[in-house]
Length: 339
Image (cartoon, rainbow, N blue to C red; front, side, top):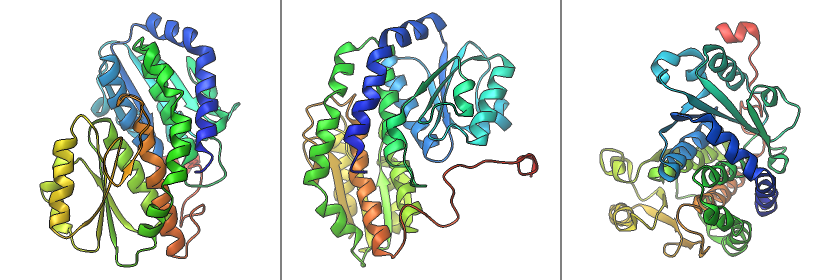
């Protein structure tokens, strides 16, 4: 987690070198829509990336689990027009993601772009274009550096595809902003993670930040085996708030564009007795002060949430790198695929 600034810089260098060719390749495709996919963490990455690309580039985009594209294509996405499937996998070996790419190609619905961290893996042979970001490699079963590095890559791709050279340049400031964020904000997530009076965690995010809220909720579940759920900000009032007690921590990924509405949700929940942790650019318990525009800084919501889950895991006497019942890669043999 602490090495993310260096990993981000290396990933941006990869795309800086290939920016022109990636832009030309995308334009030549003339895609009617984009479909992002992955499994587990990278499915949540797909949700966040699809929302970001749709908002920035103005092209219809969705995020779906790879298993849905593989096994339920008719219900998952439309077959009209030419689609770009963006498949994301840390390992490049996850069975469902491989099968999704193979099925998509066999159906002739469009092109495949793959993003992964390990060269020479199966996924890197399945795309029309294959991009590899070795700086995201990690030994832990739980994704932290890999997730943020691959997500930042999708942000950079969105800037390239939208012809936003200024935004792409802004992304180069993120590694330094991340370093400052980590250096100045380790004590608060550590204190909250060690607080035995807390027994449930909710992560709120809207727009492109909803997928990130899902990912941070997953980190809390995986690392610490704690009760944790993600919600859109405004949706939390519609039922989930019934779960609020003094033992609740609500982590809000607060945007600048909708800060008035999102902060009001945090204030309401605090009035009901919840503890709150607001993350944002200028205000809240943790402020980024990155100077990066809202369209580019979403990746900065991740480190503090990751550190919170890490601290909770240690507090619970667990190994955050080796969660119960999990493997770094889900590989299905022929029999398992049919079960």
